[in-house]
Length: 89
Image (cartoon, rainbow, N blue to C red):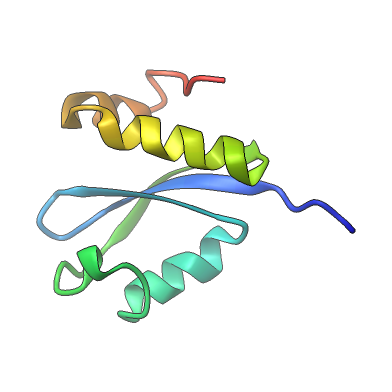
């Protein structure tokens, strides 16, 4: 069984809020969000823009980092999108 890389990504919604998620295929997942078939949070908040993505490795590590990002205040998330802050290991 081959192991796929997992990614963490951040999307900026039309109301300037940031949504964080994980996936094995960022392009596919972004299209799902754009077409209204993704997270409920992003419905009605279009247009959206992918502002950050990073390869993490395993699903469990990606989910841990996703949780960490979601716990951060918006100012820290903005710095992450600009790659001014490194993600934890």
